[in-house]
Length: 88
Image (cartoon, rainbow, N blue to C red; front, top):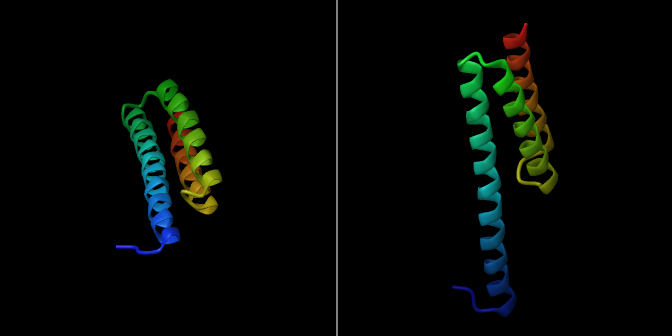
């Protein structure tokens, strides 16, 4: 257990940040899952709207530093490729 006042504050801050980061990661997972389900169902319209949502969530997470910029770019690129394959 922390003794210093600043250490106690650090623990509180870490807890808040962890909660926020986990919430954003969960949003990413749920958005990706809905996109994958639309792709597997071969529903291009639903997949397009799901892809827009994934892009929005991933970009926000990258901006906030929850995931790295290149990770966000890789996720979006792979999903765009699968969407293009479905549409073509």
